[in-house]
Image (cartoon, rainbow, N blue to C red; front, side, top):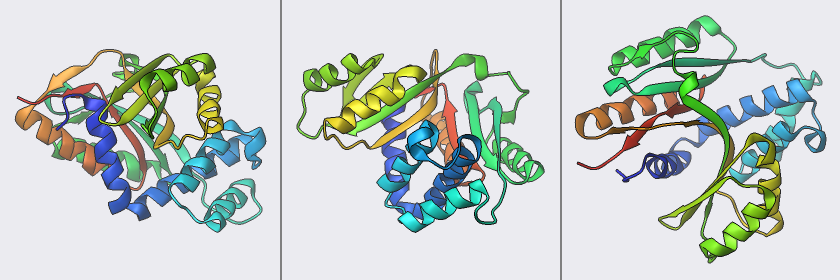
Length: 242
């Protein structure tokens, strides 16, 4: 595992994209549906929908799938109604876990989440039990694409980015919520291809995990992400080698 949790997560999720494209499409369609239902079906007037559509296109989702998801959300086609729910809990070693879900059956989802946490040495917590440990941030990752750190920094800082880190041929850019779209647009205008652009829960402080605890935590995260109702999983874990 990587010496830093975020790079471990990036690489693991990148590999998972290819292996689980069907599940990825399901999650992307749910995000498009929720975004269109809440803010309307025009991506130009709905920043959340624009981001969801761009991410779907980056994952090579067919345009027809995207259009159908939007039309179902706006009522032009019959579709399923999803609800957004966040779950909070603890994993092996007391690691804080924040789980974003979109579901058409709350009872099923909470039962599944509770079961998976318990099965892998964790537990479901009360609302508010760990959310205070995280800040909502914009996170953008992109391959180096021949650019130096100074070149990327000039682009993103001018657009309002908060932080830039470089590791293993990838840049990771952190933004506040209100500058996320500006930074993303600046990168697009510069002709740069993004690996991922999303709003995430970022831990204010991390807890180092290694050895058996790290292995158990990885299995828990993988099992949660395999669940169709789970959109994203965030922890305050920093995976380190022993």
